[in-house]
Amino acid sequence: MLSTRFTNALLFAAELHATQVRKVGGEPYLAHLLGTAAIVLDYGGGEDEAIAALLHDAIEDQGGPAARAEIERRFGESIAAIVEGCTDADRLPKPPWRQRKGAFLEKLRGASPSVRLVVAADKLHNLRALTREYRRQGESLWKHFQGGREGTLWYHRSVAEILRAGGDAMLVEELTRTGEELERLIVENTQ
Image 1 (cartoon, one colour):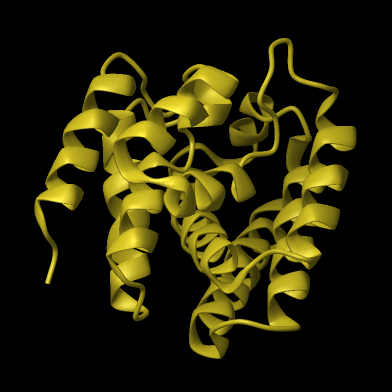
Image 2 (tube, rainbow, N blue to C red; image 1 turned 180 degrees about the horizontal axis):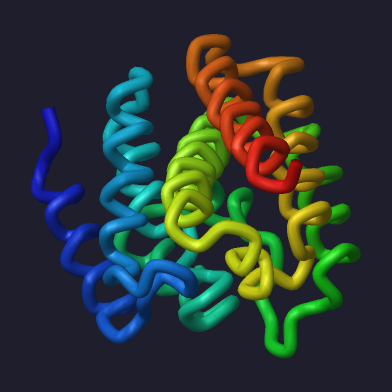
């Protein structure tokens, strides 16, 4: 059962991301946060992980260390630590894309099961959105991503490989299948 802590986190996430939209589809960013939290709950995560899923981009996109401090103040150290574990940059300007993603992958290797669950849910939700948008936009989709097509696919494959070494096998399998589906669509579209 979810308590008022989850409701408070949802309201806080809505406040933090009120003006943010997804860079490709343009939908309110809150939809991504809700989708990630739903996947966490679908795969057996508890309330702390679901709250962290709602807040998983807060440090990265909405205030860096100050956002982390506010998450800790409102929701406790364990949730702040999960959110921090999902963060690939906590400062602006962000480091170069490849360097940042490589450092995150290394951090993910030693991450807690809670961080791994939220990251897997986040990446699964992202891959579902990428697949949907690829069907709509085709190859022009990749202009929105610093890593382009190859870098984006490399990054998602790498996350899945790291998570395969430990974590929820069913969730990682769905993440892998979704990535493979996107890659099949690309091959079909570019032949």
